[in-house]
Length: 333
Image 1 (tube, helix red, strand yellow):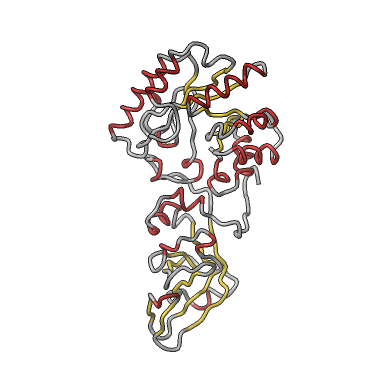
Image 2 (tube, one colour):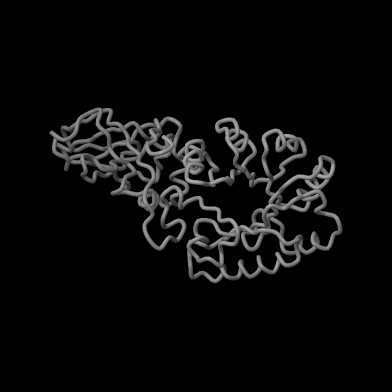
């Protein structure tokens, strides 16, 4: 999964790195994401578009950029079949809804489709797929309920390969793996969001540069709405990151970073472009304007930041703003 700009870390670099590791099949959400990937990387790899066919006008673009749609509705199937029959056949993934009530054919639609002669003519189905709703909770009964329904629905469709497991599904065991797994969150260092039994290694770090350090003369309030009061002699560092950069406003007075290896709390509200940290515990000789405060690091993972913000790691990663300078290390840097 390299949708949403590779979960915020950069789809091009993520894809290049994964190709280097042997991956040949990639999923994106929209056709625009798919086209961007084709423009940025030359190579022999598959690109599947999860949103499928949003209009008939985009059908030729699937051919122009060698893309494969995920068919989510009976209308998608019929439209793609007509197009495929007129153009010598085309590939697709057929999506089944087994419990998300989101995209994919419902069980009833699947049964009706299976009973309709010729409805899949012209379409070569690469995979039948579905998506787990509760894979981050290994003991949730819905996991097995969805798997059973998925197996039942497959029996009334033409025999083909299957794809079922997202990151969480991979950790549920081999019976969920079928022929193709679709890791996303696990690739990008999220542990709690995918029910991993052990901590997953971090793949990103996030730092914000200190623009100014000040010592308040008297008891003072910090930031909008004066939501935090600090005593005289408190040392405050203002950094160049705010909610416009994806540093969540909900981290106001609750988040923290690390300065010179020392934990420093957010003081006051996170604003659009700036956040203030109380660095009183950091020795003055260890920190100065121009230095960085670490917002995501080994001491504070993406999951940790998400907990402090009252959200999930997915939102933290995909909210990372375009103003951050990205520096890549490793094989695909």
